Image (tube, rainbow, N blue to C red; front, side, top):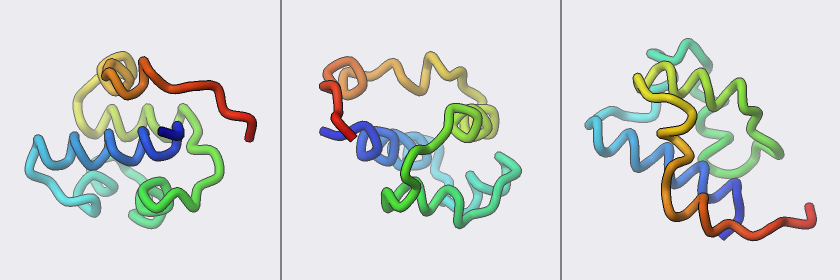
Length: 80
């Protein structure tokens, strides 16, 4: 799995756990919905850590909690 896909999957997983839509996540994170959607459909070439931190703040979790999944632990190095 690629890193961008792992990030997108994690965002969707956290939204589902909380019963919120992506638009709601964008609103509570103080960012445009298109920014979040671009991360989900992998149009964002490199979602920055600051952007992910803002999502985490909106979700009420830490960056460590966001990345603490088996999917992130098993990512291989990418050449892109």
